[in-house]
Amino acid sequence: MKEETPRSNRYYVGLFGRRNCGKSSLVNALTGQDTAIVSDVPGTTTDTVQKNMELPGIGAAVIVDTAGYDDEGGLGALRVGRTRQAARRIDLALLLVTGVPEDVAPERQWLSLFSDEGVPVICVYNKVDEWGESYVDEWQKHLGQPVLAVSARTGKGLAALRGAMADVSRSDDEPDDLTGSLAGAGDVVLLVMPQDIQAPKGRLIQPQVQTLRNLLDKRCIAICCTPEQMPATLKALHDPPSLVITDSQVFRVVEPLCPQGTKLTSFSVLFARYKGDISRFMAGAERLRNLSPDSRILIAESCTHVPLHEDIGRVKLPRLLRQRFGEGLGIDIVAGNDFPDDLTKYDLVIHCGACMFTRRHVMGRLRQACRQHVPMTNYGIAIACLTGILDKVVYPD
Image (cartoon, rainbow, N blue to C red):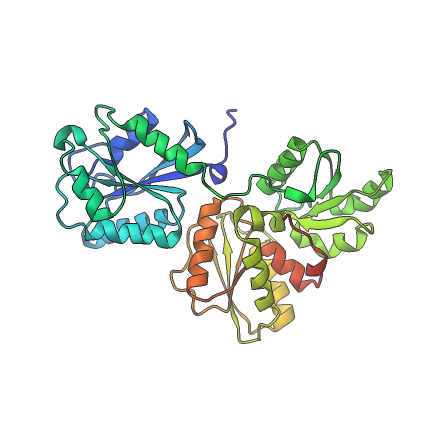
């Protein structure tokens, strides 16, 4: 079986532009394959197309081809909506233009959207083999930033474009160490991992796998057990572990068993920093302390698995919340890419650890909530707060 980097850990590059500006041709030129259908008929790309690949200077990446943002009609509006959704999830936007710069309002609007979402942009003048370079300076003047001239057909300018993409990717501020300051070489770390009905048969869930790999890369001594095995595991150790990492849903069981001086955290708390902004999530927990029975909460999951018995997002967390604030508490649940544009009816958003999302995707949702003055926290921090142990839980600097 071929092993490859999960899409949640890849660098997303999205191509945006009007219909027939050559987005699909450029996707094929960048990937070196016929990834996207190419046609002279405007509107050939009707939905986002994604292709995993290795990009020089970037590494594991996903190239995202989108429908033209000038699509028309009812179906066209739905396609443009999908394109806007893609814009919130990417790490880098390639904004394609071509031909004579006449009405540039759409391009300026999209540059503004990318700016609001914190997405870096490279402007690309495509089809230079057809139009020549005489309009490049005009486009630069209208867009207010440099424009690279390329030809997907001849390959002209592709090397410069790849170099610019690599330069932008190196400026990304994503943490490169999941456990950060919490663990170092030689530290004994105990991972407490429930293997219940929610755990996939024969496999570990992705946060557990990523955390374990991070600890092994740092030359830590990683020991794994289930909550039921934790007392026997601690007894078998010569010295207490320096750190315990557990699933948030068993905080209540694990915390009393932690030896004095042993730090405690959860996979979800680690991902709160790795995928988002831990300080904003902690601030969101303060709002959680002050909810009322009339409050309304949005629970957002990144994955779209079939709900199982005692599902944490759909059953356990809502039960904890209603035990604390009453059965009348309003709770809505969304999954995958479904996320309301208007969050103002909610008093709080509680997001999962987002192991299936990129950091850019989570940060986009955080920015959206911040603009609408709606606090956000995540599963691990919320559960620690609701069980009264948030002050005992640690997270990396």
